Length: 145
Image 1 (cartoon, rainbow, N blue to C red):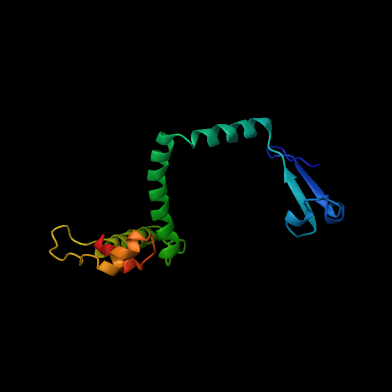
Image 2: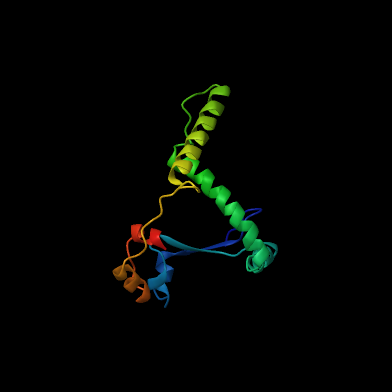
């Protein structure tokens, strides 16, 4: 067993020691297996946080955070926001602002105007039959709902 200050104690098993274990098939392959035991304070904090996550107010607040994190992820991964073309401090700011504008324009272009007279066709009898039978139908058919 090894411990590093501030980290959870770790127990490592050599792969040869795992040969007779009844749970061996469920383990990950590799030269050794590791078990991590969190400190009592960390374990109690995890239990408290997991209990808090079941609360309706926590879920409402996290929904907002989830939306913000999704936007950041879209910027970073979808629009290559992790890499900057420039090294001077002012130019990356301009790049970030222009990328954010592009994301907003892209999102707005996907929305249908509220005062639009174009309405999707009502579902056909076949589509209604699929709905009654709870059978999936392609995404473009769902616009009539």
